[in-house]
Image 1 (cartoon, rainbow, N blue to C red):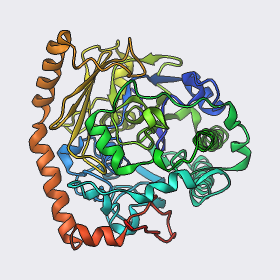
Image 2: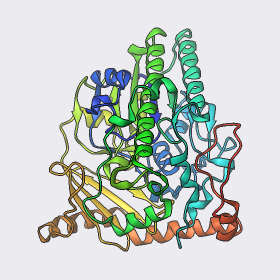
Image 3: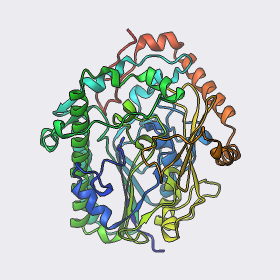
Image 4: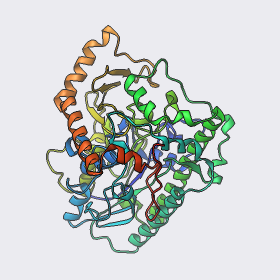
Length: 482
């Protein structure tokens, strides 16, 4: 297969259901819809960990979280594990990032030839609050979700505009230069991540009164989920359903804002003369519960949070094809290598999307997602195979869903006697990949060591935590537990 340029566009916290090409009845994403029409869509794509920093580390390294120890939003990618950017650069290829990386900081070697306006973890230390898991603190800073909604501009929307401008400039500059070797460009946005403040022209596209409220849980929340929700308490900060609808309208507006920026980038790819020689991959780092089950933010293994959109266009990706083989972030490393015409290192758990797209749907392929971060009393692991999803909560009963019969995950099959063989098979598969209890203990040991390094839990709680990672040059705003 002929090597090509590769443009990877990642956005942040994008619920895969909130896209026009995925059939959403209200949200307008015309540019992504056009990209989808000429792309292969990976219908069962997942985050390797439904929270920013671990997901992006898995995306970079092609390795699962338990393999690298990048557990949470305070233990970020530090260059210690080679990334696909390192491999490209070492082969003499140009590998450039523009926008959000969420690595440790500018002083580490993330592998890129150049990092343009990169965002890294806050103050070089990240979310220290999230390290505290026994007992779980109450994250009072979550109140910002309900307070920061509606039309307007934020530092995040301004940052995304800057990312777009710099990507457009970069593509036009490359188009004017002679191409010796294929390049890779990673453009990484924040939208539709909160704060849920959407530029007025995009917010105006949606009438909050016309937005239906999200689905409710069919019964009590799973105890692990309830503990997470008791920590974050996002929904409790809304004063009314009217506010919830405004928040959702703002999220929809941010999705359309993101789509507008992607449209500008794709137009620049065309007008620069680079489109015919460039594969394009669009994906997110994770999703957003967006009020489903009265949950907001990410961190759960439900489809809204752990599922991600993923499109791939160009040579080797058939237009309009829908691939149902499960895939995840760890498949990106071998994909980048194959697109570049380079040999992939051995021992990686993923498989190139080009290979997956070229074959029939694989009903036996099983992918892993895991969570060891903020709000979790213990490790959570998710396996997706065929139309079943298995969620293993360390120390708690599992959940099991048939996504073909129950796409909204309203009926947990784990307690049904007829599910026993399926549950046993999934658990055996998980234990063949890792030791769930041992990994949980290791994550907590590493987090405890970092807590001690920063003066202990009480000092961290007194210091406070932030709601959002500041953009480059922006001051960190901390809110303590009081």
